Amino acid sequence: MKMRLDKKQIEKLLFIASEAGKQILEVYNSDKFEITIKKDNSPLTIADRKSHEYILSQLVKHFPGIPVFSEEGVSVPYCERKDWNLFWLVDPLDGTKEFIRRNGEFTVNIALISGNKPLFGVIYIPVSGVIYLGGEEYGSYKTDGGYELRKLAVSKKTHNLIAVRSRSHSTEEEDNFYSNYDIEDTVFKGSSLKICMVAEGQADIYFRAGPTWEWDTAAGHAILSGAGGYLVNKDKSDLKYNKIEPKNYGFIASSFNIRLT
Image 1 (tube, rainbow, N blue to C red):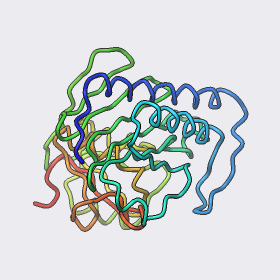
Image 2: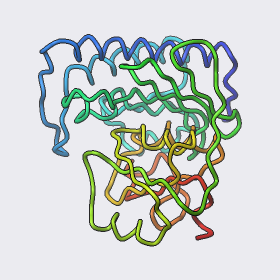
Image 3: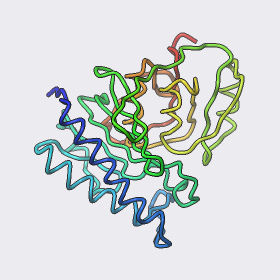
Image 4: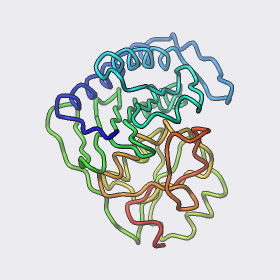
């Protein structure tokens, strides 16, 4: 099943993401983080749960019949998911470590998956009100908290590159990867903002060596594709969604066709 989101549906998605952001900020501006540790040793706060509960309720209400797969939701077995041709993939608070550090570099990520590809994505930054949105069939855009949309386009540079790296994750494998490219400068960011930087031409390449979950990349993947960029597995094969284990084992986001280098 293929779906084309119309203007009203996109506006509803933006509203849902921004309202979820308000739920997060209520916790962010208080002292009630209530941090717990999940099975994969990643942190979880009450803000993650509040955002998840709000997004889930609104997607079910406004997009009936489309299942939701969320990081903080009930684990859905593959035997059920394998028949999903269209579903929402949600990270209600991407960058929980950055949230706990209070550096503002955390986001709300909502993606619509069609088949095994991200069709459309929304990334909302609660502390600034900035929204990134788009997909390959839509183009990608950014709004700074208002109604004016600025179209995004990657730089397409292949030399004098700006690399973006994670504030919370860095490995020797990543050092080795970047040594193969003409890197002029490196910047550090948290959460899905790294992919957004490539999508809007502020960076050219981002390599993540370690594992991530599908909900970490889906919205950014859609937005980067809509801006003319690429997001692939670290072996340069297609990064697909709704796998048996919803995990990515490293990826490359780039402004140019990384397969040609």
